[in-house]
Image (cartoon, rainbow, N blue to C red):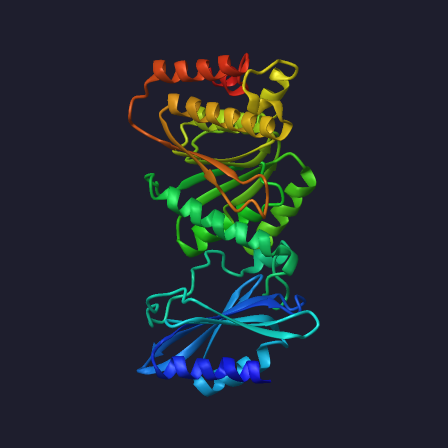
Length: 384
């Protein structure tokens, strides 16, 4: 096929003239194997220039290196059979080879996207903090061969992102010889097990973690799994967040505790003097119910979807302000991408020695409430 031959000729010419930047293979012909795309770039290993193929699967990345002739052979096999679009980027031009659903081939030349070539160093793959251990198999995240189960790929990404966030936050607090952590609303324990394994087995931190979950069947399952994994200092208890007696607490975690359960968890952390409070608020019914039927001046609140988002922001902003009153430096940011879950906002508080401007914070809270006709935030009611 002359179009494919032309693509390979341009590749050879760009390599020999030192103008090659990269190749991308996209729009997979079949999605059953989970291979989404391939990125190809030049790297230098022991003085030899090789083409580094990064095979980007839904659950992981694989990297393989080939010389020019091997690369040309692989591209002949991959283009059209595996991928419908191949783009060669050089310093002179971008050359795209594309196959239609009916197999019709077309080419396109466009102005170069790059003015400079990327470095030829052999990059270290992005670190994954969650090791493929026994707990992931028992929780159904990986199979018997140690591969991530396709339907659990998003969960595995969430676990790694969560560990990355917790690791960053722990650097801001002073850890004792023994670190006491409570995870309120631990559910099936995906993140609780991952945190224990990461802190205790990888970072060698003497951490004691307790998962609080109302559903007894999940608590029994998690305790059995912890025992099977030999996680001696990880336990789960069946009780509500309100009923749990939080004392001698260093880190409080409450991810997706529904509606005012998030406030109950924050209150427990504040009263226990937790050095770090990590929450991912879920459902924001309490404020919405208070303002239901009240006419709002803002035209934004005319539309239901905007109204819902607005009250979520108000709820979490007041939570953050109340935490600041109790000497916490707060931050609100996106946990993971919206494509994985709408429940993707994380509210974090780190205990500070700085004396808060209580009067100023109270004024801000009052102004917010007055603006939207809010009588009282639930956390105000229980934190006093």
